[in-house]
Amino acid sequence: MHCTDLTSSNLSSEGAASSLMKAGSSKANIARSENSVYQVGTPLARARATMADPSPPSREILSLSDLETIASRKLPRPVWEFFSSGATTQVTVKENSSAFSKYRIIPRVLRDVSALDTTISMFGEKLSFPLCVSPAGIQAMAHRDGELATSRACARVGVNMGVSSYATYSVEEIVAAGRSVGSINHAIQLYSMNDRLKEEAIIQRAENAGCKAILLTADSPVLGVRWNETRNGFIPPVGLGYPMLDRTSDDIQAQSHGDGFAAFNSSSHCWETEIPWLRERTRMEIWIKGVLCPEDVEMAIEYGCDGVIVSNHGGRQLDETPATVDVLAACAAAAKGRIRVHVDGGVRSGNDIFKALALGAECCWVGRPVLWGLAYDGERGVQLMLEILKGEFARCMQLAGCRSISDISPSSLGIFRADGPLARL
Ligand SMILES: Cc1cc2nc3c(=O)[nH]c(=O)nc-3n(C[C@H](O)[C@H](O)[C@H](O)COP(=O)(O)O)c2cc1C
Image (cartoon, rainbow, N blue to C red):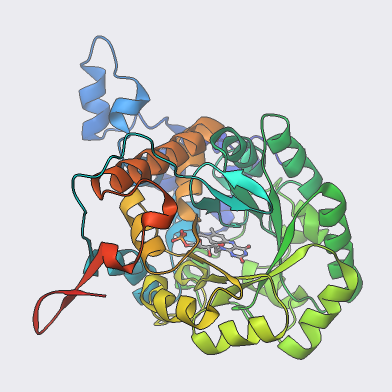
């Protein structure tokens, strides 16, 4: 265990509360976290209090947006803002989601969709539908079981998981947690580090633990500017460590999140040095996370990488980069099947997954929805989130007349243009 008990109901523990107070949050915000969501004076809580037989969670939580609302009420303000915010003016974080609504699904009718196949393969094994969980750090702030709960939930639903270098549990524990309940593969997220020996140790530990790929985060030569972290003086609660980075709770408490990042991360990273260096040290696949243009897809191919994730880090790095869904088609076209193309950023529904596949992605990844699920109900909350997406995606495929993933194509989509009716892609 690398953390104290930090679930929503326990965030009031002295350590967490004092740390968050130190981090600049108000007493009112701390008090919010002392209540379970149903005790807060929300309309939902009041309605629930009048019910003799409360509805099961599945009736309350019908969408990822429902989960987001509950998480926003349940988490202390500085934690909520750390999870949900993007960089500076929030343009990219907002557009990542809203850009999906420019696209419309064009169904084909009178097709037999009674036998549906939503599976794809990754690392030689099947995923139950085209989704993976993006590496997102410090998950024990959302629920004490953090990444262990996420790993188990992914295994139960049949999707793969990215493990952040900022995980609050070790990669060995995270992989073991998932495999204890089902079939799952993991990929380790890696930053280019000043201390190459430490970076090498992370790679070896991940490979020995059974990870199948490195996700080299390419969009972070320096940390994005996040006003919420500065305003809140954000520091994770006392008791949490980053075991993959060899950082204890005491280390973390001693500096700001931004200073901690700057201390280990190398801003001199480049294709010529990183990729050959990694190739010499691992048999794991190498994926580049954070690609936003066809030119960098070409670079990844040239350097023999196995995949790219079209990503802008959920809008947390450079603000005013394009929504990932809007650059996806160009990136997929450049790949011409020579490298795997996945995407993350703003995916919030099964329809979004369908649209991303129609635009050329093989698979989508989600970041924040995992944190919402954790905040709601730990492992069960993440499982619920994944099952909602899976159910929505399956229903979308059937209603669009697609029996299998290969039926989803650019002809399944239209796009709004300013100058006329819906245009075909
Ligand atoms: C709280 C938080 C922490 C994150 N930590 C990391 C990280 O340590 N490394 C990384 O490459 N990406 C990190 N990401 C970015 C995610 O991997 C992913 O690209 C992004 O969340 C996808 O967008 P979405 O949240 O809209 O689904 C983080 C995202 C969030 C929200």
